[in-house]
Amino acid sequence: MTKHVAIVAGESSYRTPDFLEAASLLRIAAHVVGDGVFPAGHEGLEVCLDDPTAAARTIAAELPHLDAVIGVDDHAVLAAAAAAALLGLPHNPADAVAATRNKATLRQLLSAAGTAQPDFRTAPPGAVLPAAAELGYPVVVKPTSLAASRGVIRVNHPGQAAVAENRIRSILEAAGLPATQSLLVERYIPGEEVAVEGLLGPDGLEVLAVIDKPDPLEGPFFEETLYVTPSRHDSTVQANAVRLVETAATAIGLQTGPVHAEIRIGANGDCYLIEIAARSIGGLCGRAFSFGLLGESLEVLILRAALGLASPDSSPARPATGVLMLPIPATGTLTGVGGIEAARAVPGVDHVTITIATGRRVETLPEGDRYLGFVFAGGADPVSVEQSLRMAGNELSVTIDGEEVRPPTPLA
Image (cartoon, rainbow, N blue to C red; front, side, top):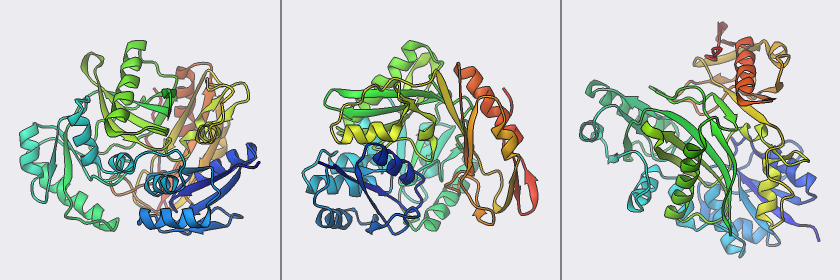
């Protein structure tokens, strides 16, 4: 009997086509659910994801025969969990998913459980300065409800605090959110970052990848560029990072499905949880991974797990892989991207995908929330993969408002 799955995603999600392809490979009937913008050639069920309860009721009423509901991105995870609950399908508790969507709530739950994380304070309007003074500089100030590093700013001294707060509140207003909401102020932890990609199930956390971020994330804004796996950190650090993700998932009540976590590695290899999400890795970054002898995609593994189907093999299909997220180097109108064929010709590069059309307005962080595109590479080891990605990035040139600006992807 054919299995049916709902793929729930916000209109700005990159991920829906990859999940649809995975469903097709598994011969699963996929139903696209979202807020009105669907992949070409696919009809979808339109819901308002800003009202997760109403969206869940619509999903349950219109698609009562579902066998699984997948929330693809942050905008969709609450509605997906609520719909699965109404249909009696495996799901995370609503309050656990909600905690991953509110950074202040997440911090409070982790603090109550004694989970290692940055010291923090919540700051209502006008309170960033005293909160930062209490924690000690430098601090990181961020909105509680935005993703992809949008609105995240490092503050090094008191003179920057009010400026950062005003800028973040303007970003919230532009995003259609209350500008008066409390902000999160965290003590800045120097060190490298890794990401952990995994699946939660009855047996706990299955780790699919520990991913290095070779470029330093020191601020003032936190634009991610390189992801490379397997990690080059020693086994103790990697084990500490994985254990921290398991502890955090338990602390907030996550039980099933994909998780993506960001961990800062401080002095002496100590690990601190920065974020954990009840979804898989964002953007097109999932295309950097493949598993088993068949080279199955991350999305195939997620669908198998959601439907209770065993995965033949979840070990990496290739020795090392990575992705370069192409940063937007300037705010303005995108007028061209050059060097794409040269980047594709770099040894080790699998493909280059530009995701923003020429003529569109683009914004840098912290106001922006999208990447220009993605470069994917594979190789015999993480060092060669990183080098391939950097070389490809250096072949690319971006023209904003008629002026050429090269993305910052220096050779190591």
